[in-house]
Image (cartoon, rainbow, N blue to C red; front, side, top):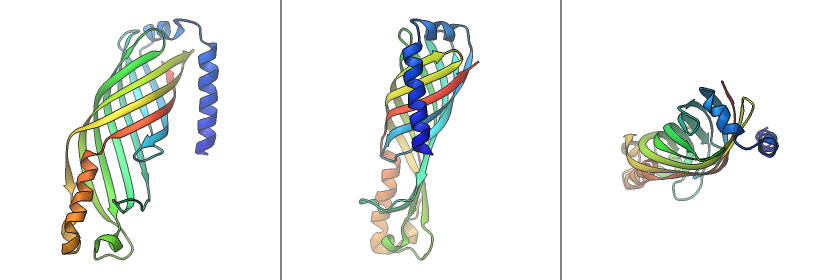
Length: 211
């Protein structure tokens, strides 16, 4: 299902981009106020498969204010983190500057929350069937490079590169005290990673509608 969605969306992007005339997208933004879109990251790191939605407000043909939401989550068991499961959510307030018809740069603030379910067998928790949850948040700064095209009211877009860097954060729910004494430092180290790791996404595909 996900591969099919990606293929259809990519075909729409290519078809829409090839059929547009110069300045069409810019002129359309100048006469319309609000747009909504759905997003899917083809490659997002460190955790793949991020998806979400955005509400965009046109301030002019060159400036756009956006409210965005992205999330990812799955079960894993890999690397030094030895995770049993992970959920990540982003909520952002972004300002986008268009240069010409479709090329744009955006930047702004992102609030990230995440939950990690640590493996009881690895960290010595007194549980046998379910992971123990730790939670953290981070205040982050985001920068993106993208092209957004208008095919009538339809928005076809590719965010070519998105970088999100943590500025500050905190572990709000720790599982360290539930672990065996000799494992508590390892738990705290894994939880600290939740606060300070960056995010990167390549080729985030967007399909939306502008009113």
